[in-house]
Length: 162
Image (cartoon, rainbow, N blue to C red; front, side, top):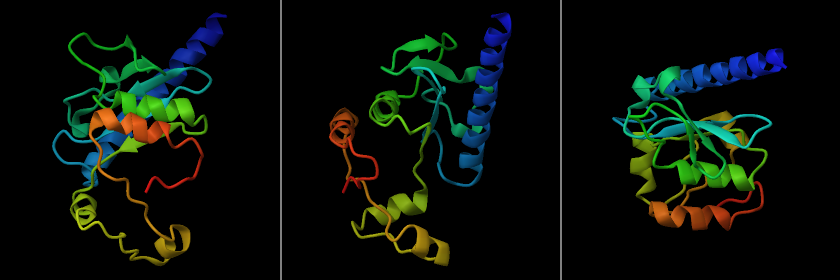
């Protein structure tokens, strides 16, 4: 039993390191600016999620500050002075209705965000994009309170929200 507990702790530690690494990578690649964006990982075989804290730039995420919540978004583990991302309900609602989703990166690349205001399809500029994506779906703007309604209405995998 002790080995199982140690293995579980080791895996969670690895997931936290991965989440911190991809958080910094998102910042370094310009996918977010300032304190925008949040990432999460579903802990396989559980009803638990690791998520980045609110109010901290993805550039500054370390494994030690990653927060653990349950699938309903209730805080389970985290530093006292930190709160889970304000987008936690958005992440956990996706995990609840899509068992196949194991990680979420909610980022706001500045050029994509600017282009989205034109309310036109994104241009596909590379051959792999043209072959693999066909088109880039846009999600219409919704206030945080409404996002859960939008997500909950999308129960079929692969359906485009727009």
